[in-house]
Image (cartoon, rainbow, N blue to C red; front, side, top):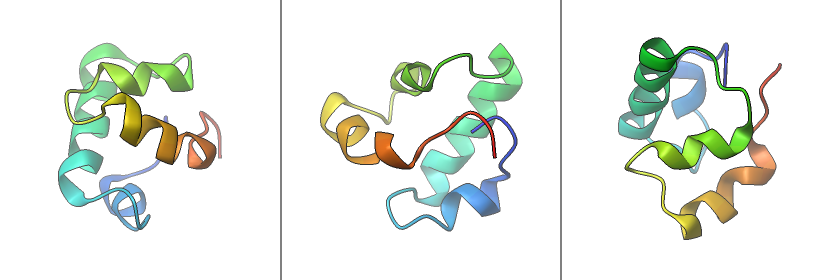
Length: 61
């Protein structure tokens, strides 16, 4: 999540372009993610969706 581009993020089946853009914008505005849980601060990510995608998220490549 800290290094992936919009294109790389949106290539995942669960992450569309809008969410990928939101992740990269959040990262730009707030700095690198320090925990995977921080993705829940993005309005597009509710608890149900977070539970679905968390196994695929990491901070490092």
